[in-house]
Image (cartoon, helix red, strand yellow):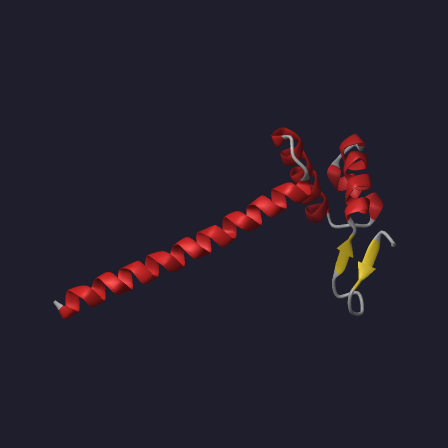
Length: 99
């Protein structure tokens, strides 16, 4: 698989996990992340995100993928909690109006 995979007419570029893993150490060893991004031909904001994710994963002793999975599960649970609160509030309002 190539380092990047184009979807439709270069509208969006998806970088592989392997490419990200190779680029982050290069960026950390460079003069600056901005210079590394320029040299590699990728967005500075994108590279900053990859570096931050890697630092966060290193600090917590997990992998970037595990952190993404945990964040996804957390978001799902927050949505479910909000839905349950709405149901609870609806039922309590309905009981008060029927009493």
